[in-house]
Image (cartoon, rainbow, N blue to C red; front, side, top):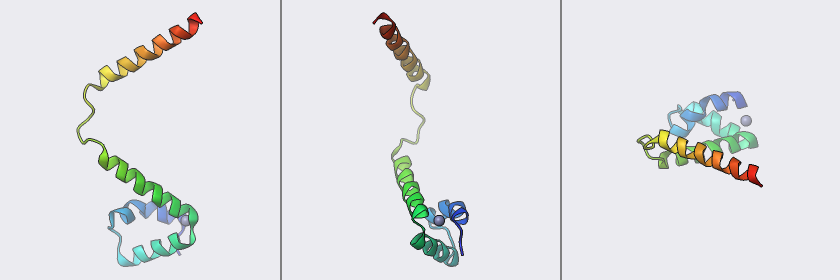
Length: 83
Ligand SMILES: [Zn+2]
């Protein structure tokens, strides 16, 4: 019987469809009886889908973005101090 730990260890392969028939059957059986692993796999699937929608290239000018965020934070804390 596959344990939760075993299922988590195989979860990427399960989602990629690269498990053997036997492993897939064991995973499906476990998922049928284990609510927690069903939820885990569902969330993994959602994360995979979200990750696929992200651009492949790194975000342009990340340095600039981080600087803008920290400047905005600094400005916000200045506002806060004045009140
Ligand atoms: Zn489980």
